[in-house]
Image 1: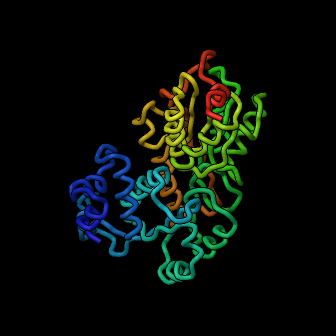
Image 2: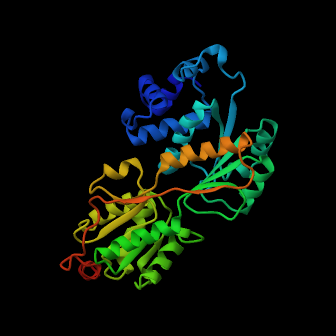
Image 3: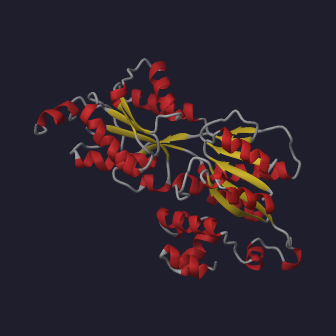
Length: 355
């Protein structure tokens, strides 16, 4: 795979691909284009020219390591697609940090890939020096990964019980922070759109409502995939059944983008009629209209710290499992405001609907 081939598949120029690979500048291309380029790089196993890489690092060709070390990335929450912008941002930061220590990402697999015998054979015959697990995983993945390597780091929003190194933000605390913020704005009827089955963000939502003495009703939630399409459909479902909500928590920014689109179709103003808050703060969150209020997760730091933890593990710097919690904050933008007593209501929408 060459830069020219990557550019052709991504539908951009070679210079754009080069800028994305060699610069940390997030303005090198749009967030969507950057995510597409990095997904192609990881899928094809592309590695920049070694001499050029060493020059970039300020090191002579004679001093470079002839046997660079490799990493396998496991997208545990993803069955078939590795282009999720949240995890793409983490992996991009991880890869930029890894290059400094002459590591490269050799493999990128989804949870579905791990179920295939050929994947296990490939990882066994040509093992990576370390594995980074992205997103919540189950016992099956934990067992497979444990058998493949002793050098494993997990990163995501849910602290796990398995004995791997972990670099995380606490998802339950994040949800509580989001709901608390909405309550501080006067919102007491708060809905949820996102996945629910074994989903800590949903259980965190219910726990937060309970702790803050706010009502919970299943009819005020929509159990949908955490994608823009899922958010769009979930909002339409909710509009048919929910109470007169004044705010909605979306499980992630992709879901929120779909929710905002559906609310516009329903002629609901955001935030005047209903406030929307989300989690992740992917790049596009600040460029949509209205700009999305969301809990900022430090994806760059998650990626960098995940690699540094893995490097320390590989080099024998520690043996006991480490668990590192990173801070987060609410990026307060335009999709939330104090409750408006004169807002449009969902009950009014249903009354106006033709029977």
